[in-house]
Amino acid sequence: MAELTEPRGRTQERGRLARRRVLEAALEIIAERPVSEIQVQQIAERAGMSPARVLYYFESRDQILAETFRWSERDLAERRAGELAAVTAPAARLAAYVRLYLPEDRHDPSWKLWLEAWLRSTSASEMSRTADAIDSGWTRDLTAIVADGVADGTFRAVRAEEFLPTFNALLDGLAVHVLIGRLGKAQAVQAALAEAAEKLGGPGLR
Image 1 (cartoon, rainbow, N blue to C red):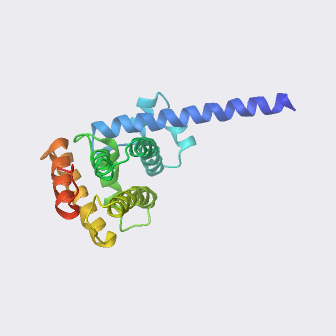
Image 2 (cartoon, rainbow, N blue to C red; image 1 turned 30 degrees about the vertical axis):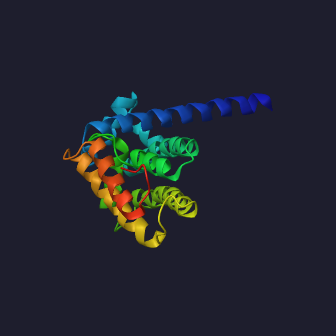
Image 3 (tube, rainbow, N blue to C red; image 1 turned 135 degrees about the vertical axis):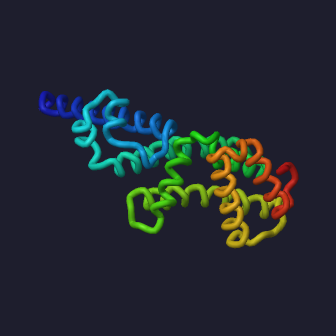
């Protein structure tokens, strides 16, 4: 029995490693060029595979993009959880959240995938469904930060359903400006925290 299961385990491991190579290759290419221009052939070449082998592991280009989106955001979610857990003060947690949320620069691959998902938001595509699932995690964290700040008196009493949509819209708008090169990340963070200080009144946000 062991002789039968061992080869199967090795096959599964090879498949896992091959899929990861494809995702890493896709993420590199996304950072370099517009998502709309990316083809399976380019991803395959970067991964050192044939297009046929790539499509053995992924059904289509869109599935590769959706899986790359999930994979990159999963790493960011783990980082976000660790950094937010290490900070107790609500104002400092909110500042950390904003820095994690906004793109690093105009080549940020996760944010380029976010834009692609937004473009498909009117369709029931895998990208748009993936974006909805990822966005819910960000929203939960922001809701908890604001609720904790209101509870301990750091923030003035605000209605989450009023603050969160407008603040999220501001963050998304600032992110787009970073992606098109009109703002640097530091400027975007400063603008977001200034707005939060105006609405929440928390010390240490500016």
